[in-house]
Image (cartoon, rainbow, N blue to C red):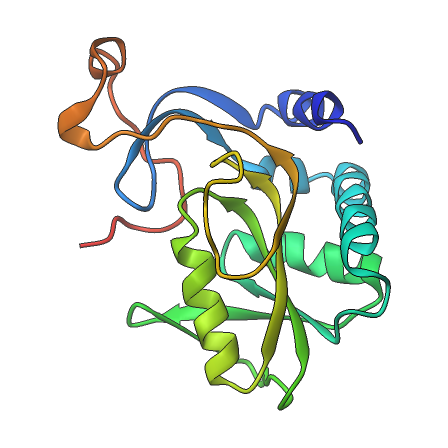
Amino acid sequence: MTQDEVLAAFRDAEALLEGHFILSSGKRSPMYLQCARVMMHTDRAMQVCAALAEKIRARHGSDAFDLCVSPAMGGVVVGYELARQLGLPSVFAERVEGSFTFRRGFEIPEGARCLMIEDVVTTGLSSRECIASIEAHGGIVVAGASLVDRSGGAADIGVPLTALLSLTIPLYDEDKLPPDLATIPAIKPGSRGLKA
């Protein structure tokens, strides 16, 4: 899929939102990408994840990973479908008291070569936290993947990141909003509360 085709899939799913958004990091943005709306239709989910799997195979080969690992909540569906496309098992990490951990009987086999999968990467903080948890549980994170990289390649997650769609979307601190954004009421559409 081309970047334009991916953007069209987001628009068709009404997943490309414009306004004034409070991100989970506390930063503000004039654009929000709601990947859950893209993933809610199985045919569209299959299409975007197949395209991402193709990019991952082209970059890393077809035998680079043993396991796909996603941070909950946003990465769970993307991680599952991408793992299916890659023919790999899929597990996810959950936040417990602010830190990622593995529950539900999920384990990371010692030395497992892992692909960490997100829905959206903005600053890379959640990705780095998930990677640290994978490594603490014995895995080796070879690379990361996401449907969207909002940083346009600027986010450093500590391993190579492959994104289906790369955009440069501005981020602002609450006290440094541009005048046009400051006049729009802010909403928080994500699944996680603000960090203290």
